[in-house]
Image 1 (cartoon, rainbow, N blue to C red):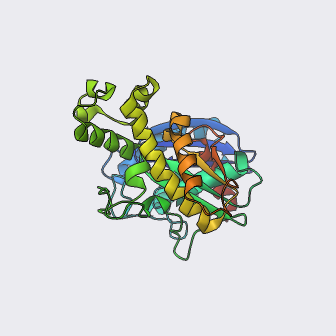
Image 2 (cartoon, rainbow, N blue to C red; image 1 turned 30 degrees about the vertical axis):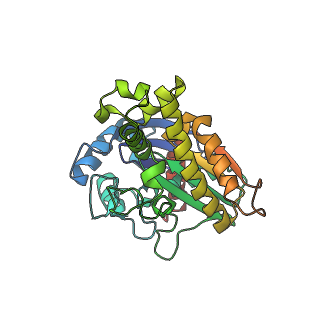
Image 3 (cartoon, rainbow, N blue to C red; image 1 turned 120 degrees about the vertical axis):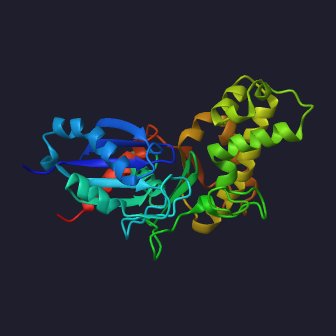
Length: 321
């Protein structure tokens, strides 16, 4: 039987989402498992295999699946390995493509999770028809995929596009996963938003805030969002601070590759204008005049997780039989 489907898998710091996709980009099945449940990656792949099996049977068995595309933090397109991903439970170098091929008995290809999202956005979403854009994923961490002249930028070793780990604040906030100080990810991720809220609470003991109704250990980005939507001044200021830093960073990125658009993707985008307005303001403020008011700042047009699943599955169509 002719192989006509691809499996797309997006491994995030908290959850893994996956789907079976056809050539038209229709996702026929979606599912999710925890990325943090198993310390041994082999046990995680076993659960993934069991979760996908009913869907594989539904489309006619493994013989109808051409291959598996995987998007993961620090996923190396060239080697098929996840290498030293700070936000994943498995440390060191993980030969994820080989392990997937051994378990499923079909070819597997890997790329950075944000690169996968960028491909999905370029094929099916807000970047359709664009040859120059940057995808920024705002979730547990901050990832990026850079497309220039219609091609993803991988660099000589497969790791180009780690904009989340660029230094934005010299000697700034410690990033627990990398040990670096002042990276974009330590401020503009969901983790960073929660950290900023806790910092504000500690630094301003006299300022009233709905955030004080929560135990400190329970404050996360969703709590900050809920308080901001209720008009809480401190929570709104957390987003303004986050947008200022993200906007500064995006200005640097614009001056690096002069994209037509920057597309924001991931859970943090649910905050809408709370994050978009200050980000746009500070991006424009920090651009040279020749770049100002030229670059679109857009939210992804694909459902959360769809861009990464579709982009990861697109890797499969390039696999050699």
